[in-house]
Image: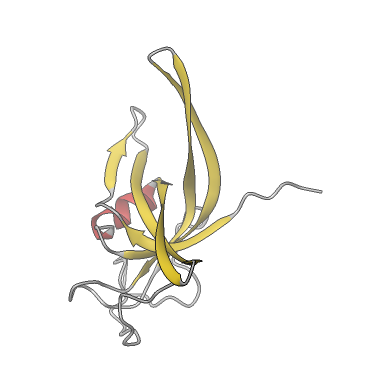
Length: 152
């Protein structure tokens, strides 16, 4: 049986995305998302945030980096990768999510509230069913009037 390494997350950006380039010219966009979870502790419900580092490589990272701002909700599909290095003589490691598909989901604080558009590392095109207006990452289509504070 084959191994499976697949992650799907929907969360909000903790900070603005950073765009860097390797010496070979490859674009690497990095950002972190917070995923909220509710759990029962005694008689009370407690909100718990989990934070995940995301890496988006190539042209799609360049295209959407300016839209990946703090508080923006995104959907991410990707795979887990362990980054290993040595620092001050000690071996260190960190698990990151390498995104293969990114969806921009709605707006925040009166910002863009239009539709969503997906970007895939494999196809470099938008995902099926997403609206299209040229190469811009937002379709401008209205979204249902949901509050940004949905508890899931």
